[in-house]
Length: 122
Image (cartoon, rainbow, N blue to C red; front, side, top):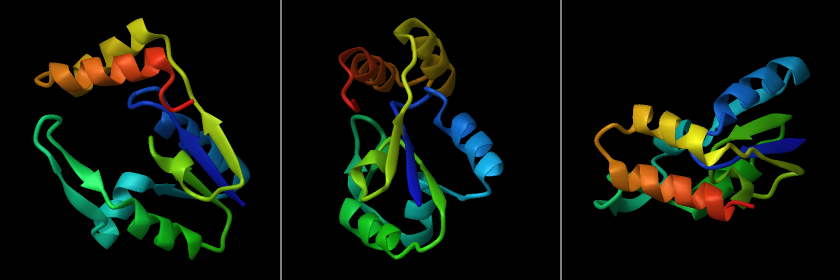
């Protein structure tokens, strides 16, 4: 079984994924780590100062996984999985978390808070 844990950055995906992985005995795959491992990038967004994921390459890799797995990442819902869990967070709390994570990137903070308010992932 493949389970996706998704949501905007800083909603608690990694925390929930770690707990669920241990409780169920499933392998945990962080999408960003997998992308680094297989070089699944298609470019770089200068405005957001972040790499652009090659979703086709990641999708091919994930399709090959045959064991029970938790996929942790804000794009994990884009892949073929059995269950999708979307985590949400109060925008005020999320903004505090994002400011700590990205203290020099107010654009990224605003974009992610706006995405949470608008329910972009849902």
